[in-house]
Image (tube, rainbow, N blue to C red; front, top):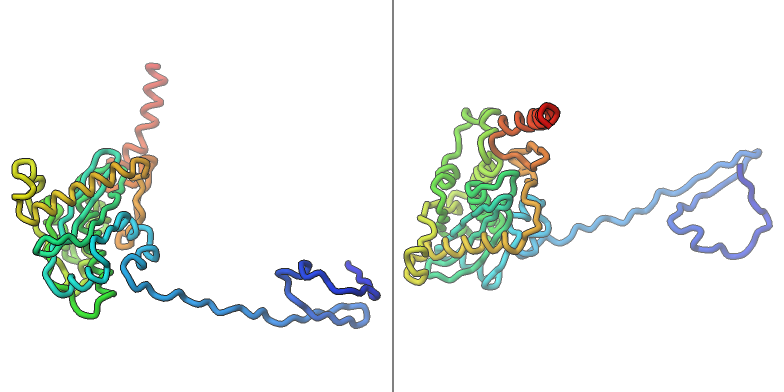
Length: 300
C-alpha cells in the first residue's frame, strides 16, 4: 500500500532518483498501471588491440603472464621485432630449483652476441625440480615466439634454443603420436608443461620453430666466461636470471600451478599442485594422517 500527496509541489531532489528508472503511472478505478521505457545502455567499446609486446602482457591469462613475470628489453621492443625478422637469433634457457622454490630464465641474443631480451619467472609445483623448471623456460620461449608472430608481417628468422637439460630437450622434441596419448599418459611427470610445449609448437609456422639443442651447462666453472662460445655464455646468463628470480621473490607461493589450458585439469592437495608421482601422492595423502593418528594413539 502506498499513498501520495496530490497537492505536493516543488522541484524534486535529484539524489532521490539517482540510479532509478523513470516510470509513467496511470490510475483507473483505484488500480494503478505503470509503464516504462527500456533502458538505453551505452555500447561497450572494446579497448584498442595492443601494439607492443609489453602492452600485450597484461591482457594474457595468468598462466601465460607468469611465463614473462620479469621481462626486460635491453633494446627498444620495435628494434627486437625488426631483428628477429631480419637476422638469425639464439635463445638460451635454464632453470633451477631450491625446494620449495624453482624458477627459469632465458636470454635472447643475435648471433653476434648482442643481447636483446631477458625473461625470468616461477616454475610452480608442489615438489620443485630442475627438470620442470627447464620445461617452463622452453615453454616461455615458445610462447614468446608465438606472440611475436602477431606483431610482425613477415616470417621470423632462423633461431636456435639452447638448453642444458638433455632430458627436457629430448622430451620437447618427441611429440607423442596420437595413439600414445591415453588417459594414463597424462599422469606422466610434468605432463602439463610438456603438453603445453607441444601444443604451442603445433601453433607455430614451421619456419618460426626454433631448433632446440642441448648444450653443456655451467661451463664457466672451468673456463673464463669471456673465453666461452656464445651459447655457453648465454647459458650462464640464463642460469643467473633464474637464480636472481628466486632470490628476488622469496615470499612467492611456488606450490600452486595456474592450470595450463592443454592439460585442462590438475590435482591439488594441501602440499600444492601435484605434477608427478600422482598415484603415490594420492595414496600418501589418503593414508598418512590416519597412520600418524594411529601411531600417536598407540605409542604416544
